[in-house]
Image 1 (cartoon, each protein chain N blue to C red):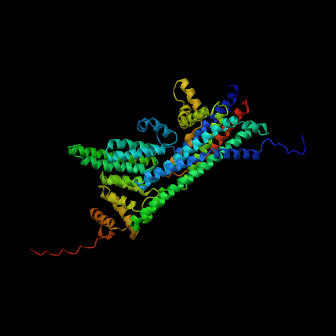
Image 2 (image 1 turned 180 degrees about the horizontal axis):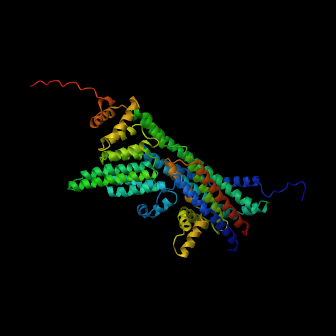
Image 3 (image 1 turned 90 degrees about the horizontal axis):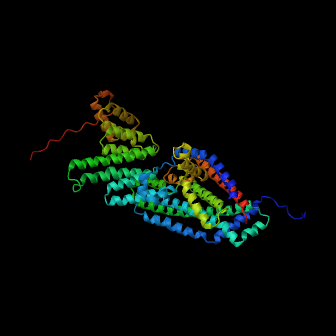
Length: 263
Length: 294
């Protein structure tokens, strides 16, 4: 036993030196986007004791995939509540997987929401079905917002958020903001800036700003002068009463309607 | 001393290389590489299991399963081979034959350990080749399917998206860190085996070290943060933080697999830390082994 005292002392001395260095390295790893997963009690109940141990022991990604696959079987049985819990756990285990956030939002805000709205047998009240639908829209939105918190540079998640605000919330100002944020991210598609301007053009109270943005895009050249942009420019110019001399686009006058022959 | 006889040096890389070579041969003859077949079955199986998924899901599951399997197999290989080293040499009396010659105990330990490191290295390289092969094959299939079914205008973007989801060179630093973690665990196992009375004890304690090593960070943060627990708990937490290595620091491959790029400076810092751990545990193993009665 006595012969083990020196080695134990060496290990403890090394431990005292290494502990602050380990903490420092962990901070650096987190700053670089690693070690972002939060392992909590909800995850433990989802994974079970062995699964939780596996997740702790370096098999986090495999456990996240397992939960993801299980959420697929919940989808097939339209068990939306269970699916939401499984998706939450999968995204917590693998918060850097854009695919998980994107698909989780889609399953909730589109699949589950439509199912809730149309399932008359489960809920005869139209008002309650609409309420459930809105709830699933919010859950989908939350998945995207959490995903963006973990992956702030993901153009894809910002784009999905813009589409969600547009198509499900009909909130064009927030959709425009999401698309504007998206356009500043690396890898954003070229059409995103146009989408941001289109959304702003539909938001009431932002007409001047929308007109300025559309004008800016128009002045970039032919590649931006698409029919939707031109039509929006024209309708906003009408709305804002822009003098004819200052207008950059006037739609060709429509030919006079042909008189119809009476039968 | 006979002036014609060669001078015996205290440290010889040739002796260490000979020991490492023999250890590697000995382990290879134990047919440890059969587990590669099991690994290949796992990766191919997961590849077949995911054929109905979208290509992003397929590649993600394949990468997670492949990298997870490389991690667990390399750790298990290092653990079992290292745990058997000393007891087997004691049982066969090889240890006495070697140490009766002018071979210092340090060289013996280092040679044995380097043999295991080589074995883990070969195993990780073979598993990585199988993994990359299966992933590449699946990528080619998906590319061919997409080329058949996608309109020409969207084809280039679709193919680029598939290629971005499949094998990327960025995975290599992650695989290197898996190797480093296995090497570190093997060194800790060697340290345990220098005072352990049986291989079973060594294996059990090493498994505990592996499990506790992955939650050491929680204990360390609690200890350094000065949590308000009872003195006994504080002492226990401090012991966990001081004695065990933080193995979680080497687990960055999960994020790498989904596209997070590891900065080279961070990679070298983690590598340096792993090498430091390995050297210190090797040194402590030598201190224990040098005083062990054989």
